[in-house]
Length: 244
Image (cartoon, rainbow, N blue to C red; front, side, top):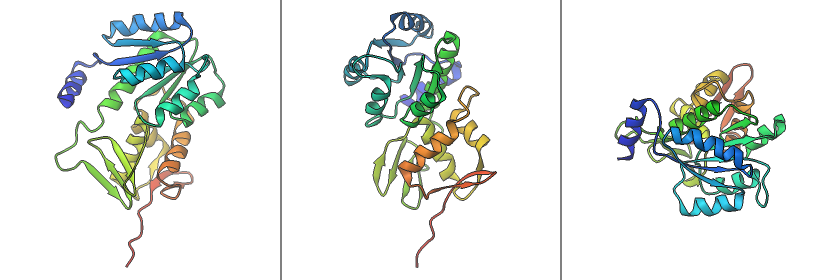
């Protein structure tokens, strides 16, 4: 049923029926985006700080999280860290903090995308739709019996969208999952930054630092030695040598 629903949404060319949680202490921002999200037939939950957001996440099935950074009680960065301990749902940051260091830090701790205020609501909706489409279409086109990819001690279940190192579950963001799948499908092949960028984000809205930041986080999760940088070319997944 889930696969059929996702496929039907893709055929329609737009997304509907998802649950989004928007966390921001500026009620005007929430009101503005809620109006546009309703036009997309998306259920919109709202919270004014991270504490309220965690309570909603514990009770509701949320498909995507929109997070401001500067909030009382629990700020956006801490909320992202907490969510990433148990979930890889898509996270879009919308914040007035425009410094590159803030954007990089947000991506490093688990956000999938970062949009700065003031923003165009149409661009925000485009990013939301892109994140939902990419996240929930993962594994839809898998052939029967082709769900698992294994390279050494690394296993990727493309049906359940989960990854394991030495049979231990590791949490991946949607972008990390797509890039790791690309690398594991052809281990030993060098992929350019452009290929990784296109496969991981699939649209021109991501920031210039995304590939480098994402690769650094992915290395931390699967082992620094597993992904090799080929200077001037790109990246490849190392194939472990068989021992006699």
